Image (tube, rainbow, N blue to C red; front, side, top):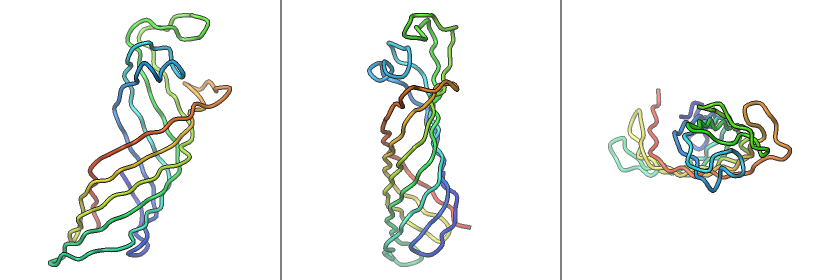
Length: 162
């Protein structure tokens, strides 16, 4: 979800928020969590963004094609839940079951590209987003060094213009 102001036909300035239910694969969790199996997770991204709408191609009758590109910076929280016994520390102590964690840290880059079919008061169209972040803590405990990662999103974007 985006909220902001279309400063001109070319420029949108605002904030973004996204939520995605997901799973954590066993290959990744060795680095940041105790699971050696898939875990349940949900990821939140939020931050500030700028979008450039370089051209609008009119199709007539108040309908146009509106391609856009965006760039943002923000913060990310990935909440995980482990539903069976798992080691919580490299030393081997067990977690309470169920155990939850909250990986979090800065999202240094959020690049987006999309195209929308724009009508009078709304638009709809596909988008692609890639973000790069760094998990720096888990449930309030800081990591000695961050855990860098990428997210790729594909979706359908619906925009309402007041």
